[in-house]
Length: 132
Image 1 (cartoon, rainbow, N blue to C red):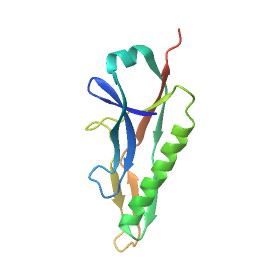
Image 2: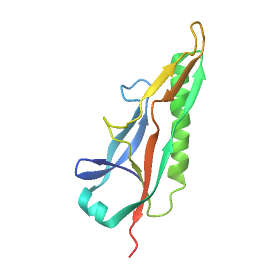
Image 3: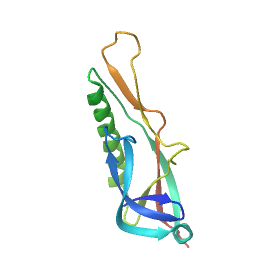
């Protein structure tokens, strides 16, 4: 399950990577589960943190961004699919602090290729129940 902290609660979320959105790397509450943050932190601990980033280039700007987001989603899903029973994948990047945004550049004037990347990695934490 994918989770994210919103204030004093943790919520289950679903991935929403959309090149047409204002925040292209997004996650939405899915309403499946939520916990009080203090209770969650008393019961679970972060066992590792992973950072992922992606990059793509194409002469068509929208295609380059879409391919970069698809690559990011594939890396995200690979980590999520490798979770063990009872583990959660938490979005650790914070909005307004270190949340990733898509960026593009063209190395030289007249270059026909757009290169898309994230301005900072997407930070993910793997959480599991504390052991006694």
